[in-house]
Amino acid sequence: MRFPPTSFPRLSGSWRRARCWLWQAGLLLSAAGTLRGAPAVEEGWRDLAGYLFHDAHEVFLRASTGSERGRVLGAAASLLNDSPVTAAKVAEVEAQLRGLLADRAADEPAICARYLLARIAHLHRPAEIAEIEAGYRAVIAMAPAHPLAQLAAGKLALVLLYQRPDLGVPARLAAAAELAPIAGAAQLPETGCAYYRALAGAALYYDVLDERVLAWLVRADVLETHDIVTATSLRLQLAEVARALGHREQALAYYRQFLATAVSTDNRYRTAAERMAELAKATP
Image 1 (tube, rainbow, N blue to C red):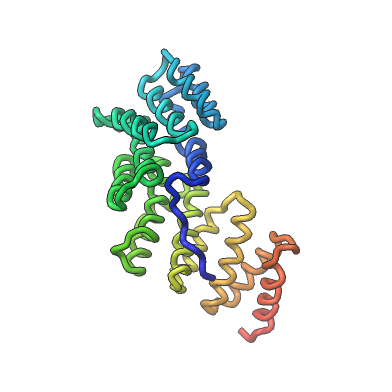
Image 2: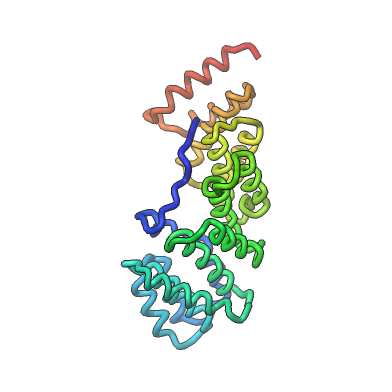
């Protein structure tokens, strides 16, 4: 039941997919109100959502109507994604994003800019953990009810769980769990589910198995991820943890759910069926 910690690449192959998810889960949602009524800029956001980063950047540079702050944000975001990503590009994007924060505005472009600055510090240039943590906390403090605050809180939880060298295991788990009201919110169910699974996964990685782990997995399950693979694995995790903690009926229920959704060729299927049969025979 031991899981490896989440990796944090700086410029590895995973960064592109992770950032692309941002546009769909956060930036596009938050920018919609700012950009409505500006067809040229909207085209740039559509290109960005479709991973056409170079085309999007060209559109944002040419756009002469609509929100100037939205255009600057789009230009910075598309440039950051346009391969090859170089140190010079990252520095240019950071300067553009900091310009959106210069007047201390708290509008959508400013919130998005602050989130992107935190991600840049985390993924695209050498930065101390303290700076990375401060960047995510700044997003949360700026707009705690915003979807990007939930994304930031989820990323911050991983930093606390795996990257804070000064914290012991109990402190790591406690600090990450304190983010639950924001990171585990239902406004972005997939993000909330991932957060609670991260808490449970970190506890198991550090050989901590108690009622908190089961509670975190239950909360993840309640958020109902739409990814069938994740949902199936989550039910098995729930069954295994409930079994280890001695919750027989709960474990049986989750084993049944796992077997009902897993394919018989899944290499975990037989083991789950055997464990369910053993529990069913055991005296309550």
